Amino acid sequence: MHSAFYMTPLEVLLRHLQVETLILTGPTSASCITVTAHDANMRGFDLYIPADCSCARNAEEHQQAFGQLEAAAGANLTPSTSVKLPNIIRRTQISQQAPTARRTGGNS
Image 1 (cartoon, one colour):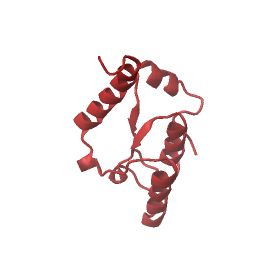
Image 2: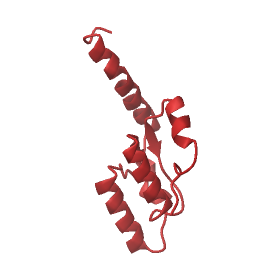
Image 3: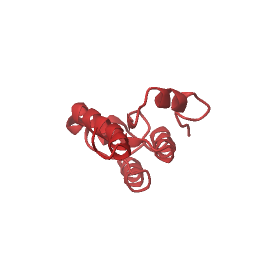
Image 4: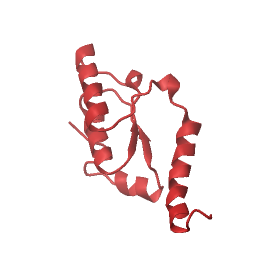
């Protein structure tokens, strides 16, 4: 099983770009997506994993992987047709502004 973070500069790049939220898709929900999701969660990234944008060897394995991803990695399993990028971007912008508002007493 392989994580997109394992022995790659991915985290450095995402931090440099100030990315806070990841949308994970790919062909193997029970391996690569699962491992990458756990690594991303441990690094503090918010996760969206549309279940209809990946697969597994069979439907049972796919469902088990997504049950575990939701419970253990805190992933949002919104279907791809419901993922609204403008809303995700807006939430990220608000969360980036929140620390500034706290430091200045909310008068920014």
